[in-house]
Length: 261
Length: 200
Image (cartoon, rainbow over all chains, first blue to last red; front, side, top):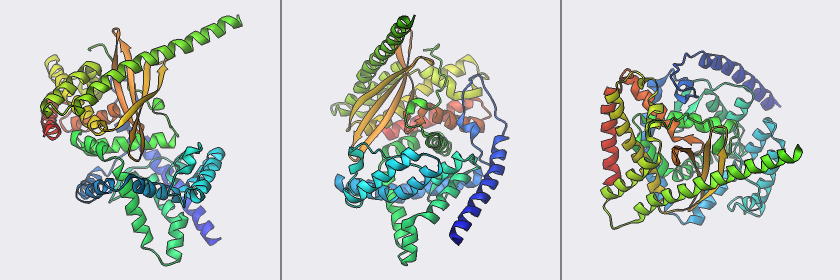
């Protein structure tokens, strides 16, 4: 009960603070040009850009020196091993995905996710095999950041977190809530098996990174300002996740003129 | 009256489907040109890139995208600067697409879900790429103009290449006070380093 009370108070404080941050980000003056379209770079509120850039450079070096080589090594593991690890980690996230779906009023998705979790945990041998996908129970991601956004909490300012990478105030709070409420983490702390937390986080990072090696390299090698490109990519991806856009066709269309071709 | 509404509706559905299929067939041919260039081991990396660059330059609305991503710097620039910028941008775009497609060259793909957005007159074609541990959906935005098709955007995980480039360019343009002439120098340097990474 005291935990529930703390949780509710934390949420209320976060919502209040984010409303203030959101007001701040809404008041930025943007420069319009001759194209009427949404500009992600103008929507991003990044008052701590110099600090963020410094952390970004550190993360970039850490990625090049540690994460990318390890992810490339991970890619050499047999495919069933890679799939098994990815599925297992993904299944561990399901309880909180279900909670967030319920908090966002997505009853249907919560039922599907519960079915998915039960099927994969049992028939899929603790989530190692994604049996649920084959019977039409699709994987849908929801987190506390998305829930807060659905409740009207603004982005707040842009943040680059050491090791964890791009985020914003709302999503960082969402991430902290995830860590605080995750049942596996709670179990590990209660049983004094805290080593599980960093191992799980690191394995998850390696698994995720291994899936986007080419995309990240293409972006890094071809961006004039890699920081700005990552920031834009982060906001586009999060915006789509919050609006539950499963389909690329719903992302904003840039107005490209073909008059000069 | 109802029968006319139904006929109109069916005709509308049919025509958008045909339009989507037409764009899809065209796109498949062009994607295969790029992927085949990667699979051809008898050509040098330089020749391979030039082949890919030709395909991309012909099929992408390069000049229109160049104008869009340059934002307000465009209107401040003279004709010669714009021409030089478009030339540099087209190479930059080719380098971006080529390095992304390089990663997909050893994977199989299928074009699924071609849709026609009649409001914006744009076809959206999903490309499902099958990799070792799963699938990835890439969406091509294609527009018909001047009796042919042009690619106007390319999306991976809801991230638009054009929007990302616009943010990337906008950030660098701010450092040169939106002076496209000075920006061209930065773009040229970037193209050279990207080219060296791709072909070496």
